[in-house]
Structures are given as C-alpha cells and as structure tokens.
Length: 129
Image (cartoon, rainbow, N blue to C red; front, side):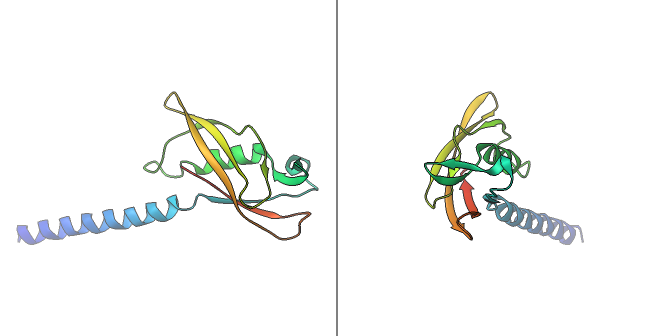
C-alpha cells in the first residue's frame, strides 16, 4: 500500500516538473517583442539614417519588463541602457546593457520583421538572453 502511494507521489511530482518545464520553455521563448513606430506619438517618432526607428527608451522598457519574466528563467536585471535607437529595417542590430548581480550584461537586439505602412511600420524585434 505504501509502495503504491510512494510510486504515485513520485510519478505526480515528475509529471508536475515536466509540465512546469514545458511552461517555462514556452514563456522563455516569448522574447520576441513588437512595437509600432507611430509618427503621431512624439515619444516613438525617431529617425536613424533617414529610416524610422524604435526609440531606445522603448527598447529599454520592453527589455526590462521581459528579460526576466519568471523567477526561475534568466537573470534579474535592472538599469537597462540602449545607446542608440533601433532602425526599422530587417537585420538592424544593436546592443543594450543592464546590471545583474553587480556586473554589466550585454543584450543584443535585432529587427526580425517589418510590416505595414512604411510611414507607420510595425517592427518586430528580438533580444537575446
């Protein structure tokens, strides 16, 4: 009787751990961000080399919010800083930095897709953990 209970408990714990791992993997894969560069909103209207771009303050806020979505995934970061705006051109890249446990962490960012009206494109970008 106790052996059956023990096997059931161990099986239940293993199933829960597998389900938790799957949920963690799915949420951690959600590091693709998108934002709409809207020329009407002053805070988002920036240009780099004649192209619309995602303002660095938007990059910083999104990275700060998504870099560490769960306590057991990634590192806890703060003081995110992006030195430049991110051009709304597929393949455009940049590197932001943050602080974690007293050290600087580099966070590469890259535009993976741009769609919609060229005057108001929707920019899909990704950062690396």
